[in-house]
Length: 83
Image (tube, rainbow, N blue to C red; front, side, top):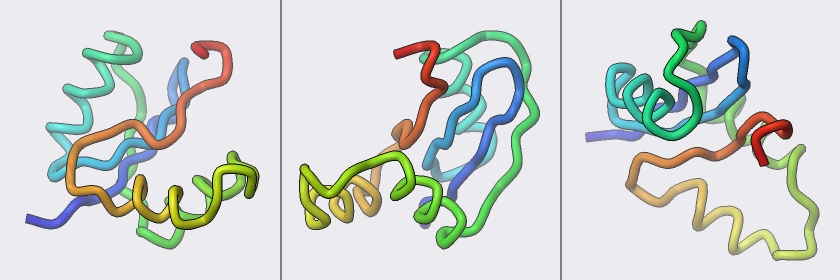
């Protein structure tokens, strides 16, 4: 299975990588907010561009590439008010 990228733009923003839309929604509800949110599948390039905007080079590009391509469901970006 291939990971896909999902952007949640409701009350709390999130960018999540998951194997399916349903898995991404469940992960969002379990880890961020149980309120329904608008979710859109986005391209890998879109997700990568958003992901890179949020991080500095202090941790190194190799680290960020590793996080981005790991084959597990994970939150890549989260609303700053939740941090």
